[in-house]
Length: 337
Image (cartoon, rainbow, N blue to C red; front, side):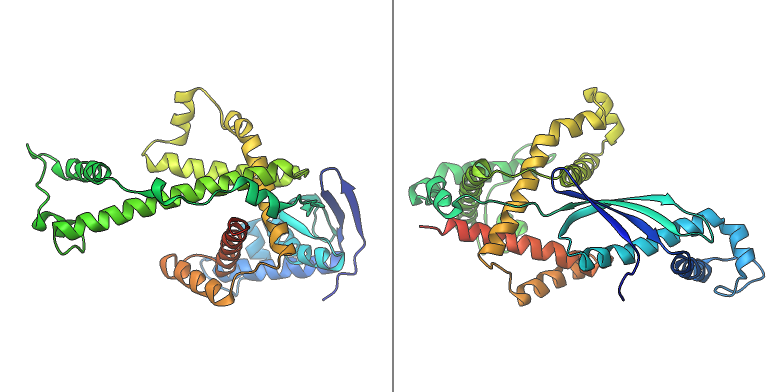
């Protein structure tokens, strides 16, 4: 279905666009009708069956402005992707949608502000990856007996609880910790895990050096909408982390004598750097034709859906594709010689 309405597309600064226009009265009325039907399917009013409530009765209970608001959301959710496709707009992130005119029997006026993919002039990222990266040195990854003993001591303290003495690390004790044959087997596996942890830390440090070098050498202006979107993600994650400690976010803010806006301002540079990194990774993946395997994607999405039954499959797929693509790009950069 092609959109025939007239759109006004205006280029803004920092790779942003404004799309404005009107959805014709007749078209918007179809969305209003669909919205009424959708609301009626769930609404319970004494004397009427669900899905068989007369429109005038439904409006009395729901209010016309709520119906129009939901109809507008439905209409723009469906039309926005078409606007992008038909006008060859490479939008990124979530758009800011403003309703400029809404009334029964009238066109729906709207204004949409969206970020578009900026022109990214990448430096010689392969050369920079070689310059900034470093190979893992086996000597730096060696695990000493002291490190193993220190880790065992920490485990003993955690398991001590109300006992006067820490539990002895014998066969019986280690079997209570997991799938271990005996104390010797436990120590071997513990040493292996400590080494693996060291490798991961070194790998992360190495990736960070490569990434920082490429970001530093890339001239790129980030759309403000993308930075705000990243700030939203960071704020959401931070609130979740605070709640996990049993503290209310509002109480945390009072304690540090800051507002949420203060924290967001402090994070702007970090959010800009994260956004820049995502665009750089996207561009490298595009230029090098780096794509995750379809079977890998399906397997990961399956795991998410198994553990989070309420998750949206489409969102899960987007998340997995991005995660796997990022990993493949980092591996590509690490393997440059």
